[in-house]
Length: 166
Image (cartoon, rainbow, N blue to C red; front, side, top):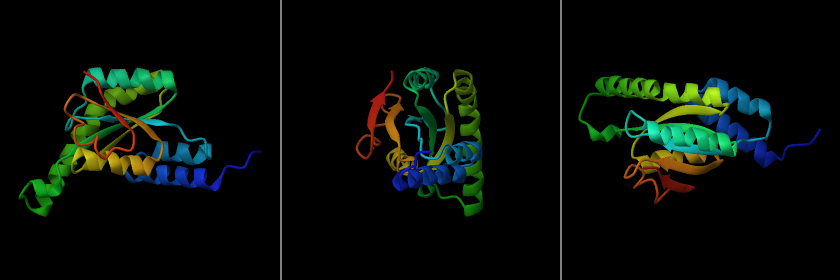
């Protein structure tokens, strides 16, 4: 049996922890089980709570052809963007996360049909910070796909190439 290098194992654990913290426990378990055979990933940057069908379908088929995994990323407004009470802010964030999860669900089911490993994450703040945080957590992000104009602030801080799909 080949030994997996320590750096690769640490990357796997960091990726699994990031996914587990975002609620993707099954994906996190698969990552731990595969022991160092990490999959390259594509981030699909949503527009608020939703994902364009054209962008998502393109990402699904690209990931299937390349053998990459997908992360559908929803970016909600930062906490300081409103003047609500903490309780109201929590309710609004939970509502955003639920709506974003529902928007991603059809594409996650399609990924399952295509045999593409896929998950959904929600991050609050600007899209550049969100892309950087998710990329740092997953370690193996190779592409970021977005709608025109949606990834403008992600491009300057992104650790991978940002492509817009129109």
